[in-house]
Length: 242
Image 1: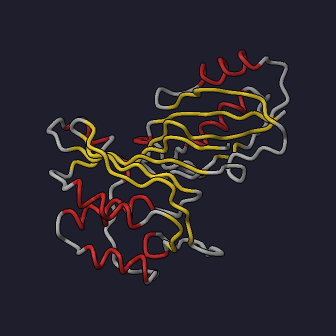
Image 2 (image 1 turned 45 degrees about the vertical axis):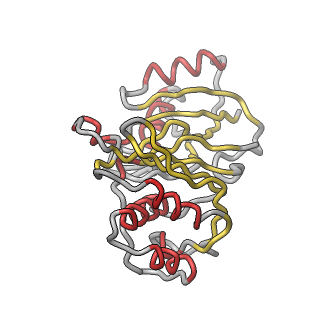
């Protein structure tokens, strides 16, 4: 039987999503939990996206195949009963074998939190970067709407067929002491949101011109200098399959 789960996690003590031999990862912790429920045998977990070290999630989605006598509610409780304090399953449901957490997804939504206040304990879930010109940030955000080649705003760790993404939502909002960037797209490249946020903030702080920002979109280049926001402000909010 194939199960779909939606989970949240505090990424502060995880070395990202993807399984690693020596480091603590979200996929690794989930597979260790499922191994306990499957008489010591591995159950592979596939996520909708590979969040980086320090990145958080509210609506990460994953699937796994498991033959069990446990009912859905019993399995849900058993998973959460074995979860560490920084990981929690929000929902669990049976899905057809054709469902794939990554390839069935239509879009993904992220939020990046920039904090303008003085409460230091928020440094683990936001980028403390002082005052920001929201109007300028939104001028930059509007320019990336639609389909663009984001080679300039990605880490080319492995070759890809193309670097085009369709940006459906791109906006900055003042939300209390936070200025948050909200973005939804059909796909994201490695480090793409962090490069976009870092570079837009640089435009707001007059470290880079709007013309130069636009040129990075118009003339995509690999290994070009862009600004990179730290990981702790990034949150995977939702994955849409509709």
